[in-house]
Length: 486
Image 1: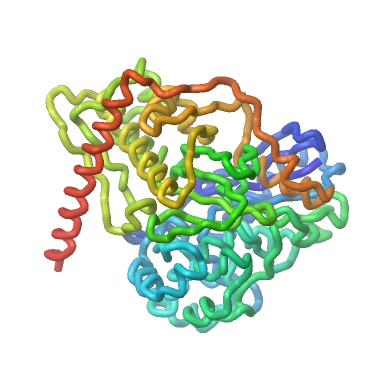
Image 2: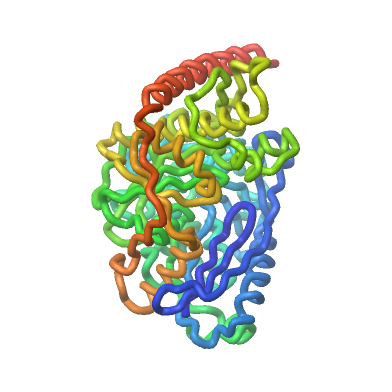
C-alpha cells in the first residue's frame, strides 16, 4: 500500500492506495489561515504536524503494515523559516500573501530572474518573502538557517531530512527551471546560498525514509521510503494523468488553475504564465493561475447567506452572460495581470439582478479569468483543445458548461473518485518504491463529456470582451486610487 498526504490551505488530506491504485481509505483534518493584516496570509507549521498526526491516526485504523511508500503534495510558495536547530522562527507566509509586492517588483526588475527561472517574480513566491523578512523582521533573518516549502516541512518531520523536489522549487524564484537545479546567482541576489536550501530530488525519486519512532507509532514498516512528491498542482497533474504533452486539466479549487503538460521547456514570462518543472523527470508544465476561484463563489455565498451548492444548483440551463459582470480579483491576480493591488467588483447591477443573476455573474467572471489564462498559454505556443475538470467547483455542471463554451473546448468529467494532490502523491510514492515511471499515471475513466454550446459561443465571446473592458476600467480606478491614497 501507499500513502499520499496533501497539505492544502484549508486542510490536510491523506489517502491509502493499494498496488492497483485503488483508494482504500481517506482522511482529512482542517486547517485555518491567519490574516493579521490586509494582504497577509499565514499558518503555524505546528498545525500541519497536528493535522498529519490526525490523518495518519485515521488511516491507521485500516492497518498500515503493508505500506511501502509515502508521497507528499502541498500548497506551493510558502516561506517556512527555520533556525540552525530546525526550530520554526515565525508563522509560514503562504502562497496567497501579497505583502512582499515591492520586493517582488525589485527582484523582477533584474532580468536574470526571468531569464533563469522562466517566470515573473510574483509577490506570492518565496524569494521576495525572505527579502521582506530581511527588511521588516531582521532578527528572524539573522537567525535563518533553512528555508523549506510547506510540504517539505512535513518531510523534515517524517524523515529528519531537508529535501525538496523540482516542481515545488520552481515556485521559489531560486530555481533554474530549465536546468532543474538551484542557481547560485539567484540565491546570492537575495542574500542566501545553497546551505539555506534543501537538497533536490525528482518527485518520483526517494527523498528519505520514515523515522523509526513515527513508523512504529502507526505500524508502518521500518525503512518505508518517502518520495519527493510534488507541488499541489503538479501532484494533481500526476493524479489525473496529465503528464504528457497535449494533456491538460482545469482545477476549480480555492484558486483556479489551467494546467498543461509539456515535454520541453518553453517559458514566456511576459504572459504571466507559470512555467515549472513537473513532478516526473524530463517533463515541465505550464499553468495559468487565478487566485480566487471557488473562493470567489464561497465569498458570494457567505454574503447572501447561502451555501455554494444551493446557489449553483438553482441555475438551470446555461444562459448567455447578462448585464451584471463580476471581476473575481478579491486578493489580486496572477495570470495575466500580475497585480497584487487589483481588486474585484460587481458592475452593471440593476433591479433585475436577483440572486441567480448575481451567481451567474460570479461563475462567468471566474470563467472569463480562465479564458484569459487560455489566451496566455496560447501566446507561449501551448494549445488547449480538451480539458479534464477537477476540484470542488467541477461538481457544478452549469460552471463546466460555461467553461466549455467560453474556452471553446471539450471538458471531460472523470468518474467519481479522488484524482487530486493526495492521489498524485500516492502515485509518486508507488513510482519511488517500485522504480516505475510516468506510465503508471494513467488518465481516469471519463463519466461524461461536455461540449461547447455553439448557440451561445458568440454571446460568451461578447461577454469576455465586456469583461476585459470592465477589467481595464477597474484597474485604472485602482491605479488612480493608489496615487491619491495618503
